[in-house]
Length: 190
Image 1 (tube, rainbow, N blue to C red):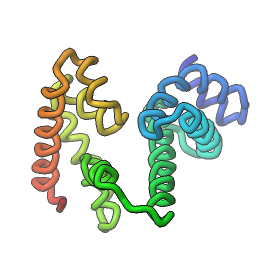
Image 2: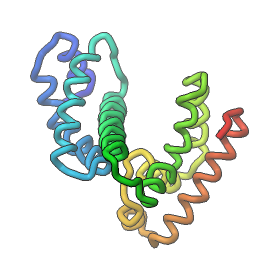
Image 3: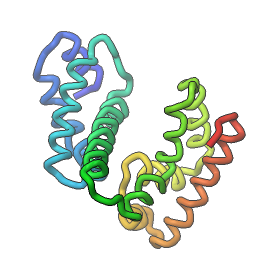
Image 4: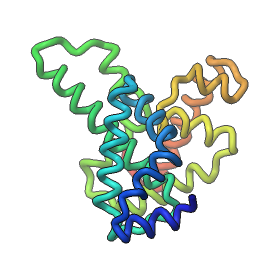
């Protein structure tokens, strides 16, 4: 079914639109959420929350294209759940392991979290990130997005791209450094 038809159904408040969304995009959204949350049950629950959020947001929003819009909602819900789960662990009286600290601070998205506290123009940041992604080759873009947007394991990305895991890690490190330089050139402080 066409995205425009689904959006029209959502505007007319037809609940079948949610079934079509589930059929068309459910597996992809659940896979993205599972990469972030780790368990299929949490991913399913996250996708259910996504459907509820889509129902609440459309109308008035009219996203085009629909898939990135839904994936962004799914990803944000999953990240919020993961942050909440980590916060509960952190304040439950246990010690924070070195591995947890590395996970939280190690990827480029954690580095970009600095912008949350700044009075940064979101459009400028979005344009800078889009400019960076536009400057990448197709392979680099897939590598970057699969790791830092979908949070796929490096081993799975390496298999998908037909490269070694070590090569994928090296290329990701270089891409993070290129992103840092690009954002600094655009006037963002990291």
